[in-house]
Image (cartoon, rainbow, N blue to C red):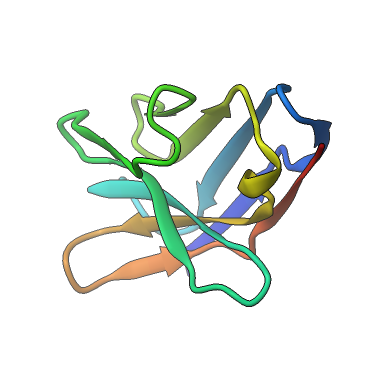
Length: 116
């Protein structure tokens, strides 16, 4: 069974930084694409950033220039460096790892709260 565990969330003031980590464990050799999503109260889950096997990254417009997604060489850990945080970044952040187009795994989420 594959498990994803996020960490690194917390409370930070606007303008501050946080680094989220997503570590995979279980019977998996590597993932094709890893991504971060977030969900604020009363809102739909949205894609924040993704990184494909070739290192190609994609970002939501709202975080471009502030957030950076990366992954380790084993393709089992993903990171999200978040700088210049804003109150509107407050949400539960989820890690998603995809083996292929049909097999996906989700973590339980980590809370990020940005105070004004």
